[in-house]
Image (cartoon, rainbow, N blue to C red; front, side, top):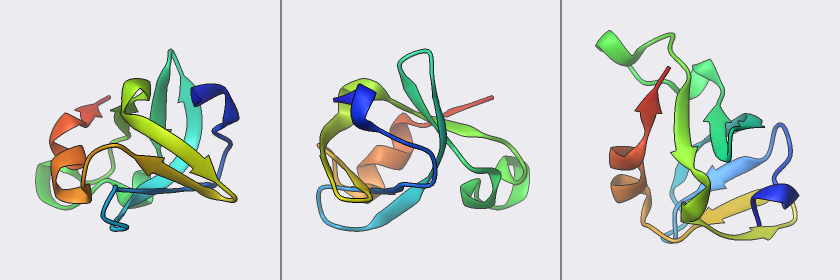
Length: 78
């Protein structure tokens, strides 16, 4: 399903909570825009969501198989 993910789509957890916005797909992972990078030491960095967490693509939304609060623990910084 990662091949259906496009730039500017909203990434939401299984619970409907906003996780981020797609910057692009890179190496089988979703790269989130910097504006969704958080605060403090995370601010200004791109974060990645593993493609394996994508449960479905519905319109302009990417739904993950994990709830939003859990999905952010899988993020990797770049």
